[in-house]
Length: 140
Image 1 (cartoon, rainbow, N blue to C red):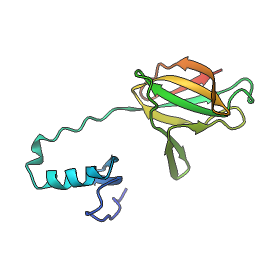
Image 2 (spheres, rainbow, N blue to C red):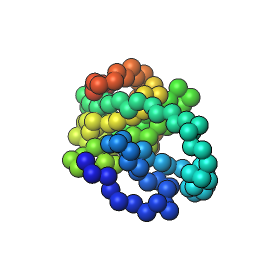
Image 3 (cartoon, rainbow, N blue to C red):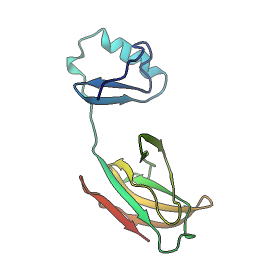
Image 4 (tube, one colour):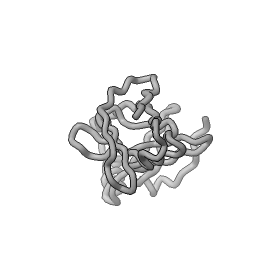
């Protein structure tokens, strides 16, 4: 894959390519200033912690049971959910359930709880045991 061209002055929410590795930087506007400062210093001491991404798919026995899904970490905070559809990727903190199932969802390995929502209200919850390299099938 050929890395895309980019404007080096816009670091915020950009993808960086290094030897076929994409690094996406996301944060508040201060992030761009902080990284520009780091680039002028000895960057050898910079530590980047990368979590694993794991996959799951939700199926409902009753398609009317829920309309959306969110995923929480151990602290109860929502985690980002990626949905790959063809050549596009959508990200957010919830995902739709259509005709009783979700797309295959990608979440960080810190995800521990899946929550079903209907009209914004919680209607179900299940603990997750995610495994790298497998798509966890979550059934309600």
